[in-house]
Length: 482
Image (cartoon, rainbow, N blue to C red; front, side):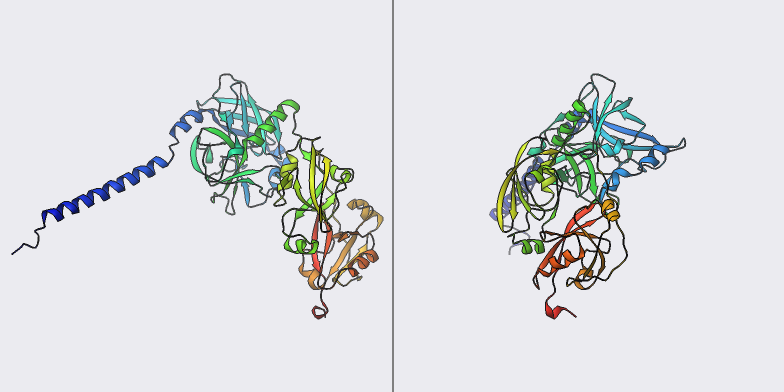
């Protein structure tokens, strides 16, 4: 009788062979996965000495005068980070400090960091990896790109190698070196999530951000973002957060944008950007339907500055810009990026959609002024002149027109009802146009509204404070009234 535990020799050999094969396969697979994962040690050893800690100190008087201006134009959910405590007081003496990061781009002492790290500073110290602390002077800053160029007095300093940020693609590995929470030379890594991202901030609409999932925290601002070749491809600047901490989305300024800023700061002390002189907004589905557009791509023109490049090229309010110099405008934020990075004086072609047709107009790009004026807002009492859209309007007097800078057009909204009350409109808004018709009096407004067919939408060009944009209001059908 065969023992239960006795096994045929052939079967035993086959079984052991299969076990050995399976084990070898697992080991080989694990080894392959290990080979595929990057090793950042050489990259860090080579570049860490050129990464610095930046400490900016300013007096309470300077801080109070400046306030937090650098963050006012940044949506709340986008966070720019300093070191521990941000700009809170550190000790006595009436001083405030911010801690950030930076990196050396030339052996004779030029250092790059973020503008928001050093803005308003009375004293800037750069701490090197060998623990030397050198006083830095600001060569120049640019708020729109959030880049600051510093200079320390030293020679033979370690430097980083600069890469080509235009070659970055989503999915590529990237590495950050910086001083989160004051912890010098901390290394974090991740992948590129998106390139050419607009963050919606009014002061950085000319920066096509690199979006990554690299952990960035307080003190990382101004530090370098490296590719796997050990080249700097960006400057870490912001994170996307509704908690104040890292949530998996961070943003870096492309090094190509930063170095363009550097060259201009060195040569002229300021940065020149292109401007064509249009105010724009997104094309919504309702706007596309009203205008007869096949899609929501493009930038809807809501204002044209008198005497600007766009004005001279006969670009009109309610035109939709479809492409700029051969580059399609898929979303509104594409246009400022393209125009702002165009050298003033350059010839460019703009493709437009107007009255159901496309046309291309040539223009010469102007220069964005460095000083921006702000218009006062208007409040007024409610009136009773209501039209079929449910919008009560009144004429503006001479003083109000002067205050708003609307000499030849505009009526003020005093009351809303029906669908208009559920819209983005509010009393005190100034209506400049109804569809393509300028309105200067309440009667002109009513006449323009009468031309809107029942069930269709009227596109109102509305001014509120120093902002102007289109608002679509549907003309109610008879069954909707009452």
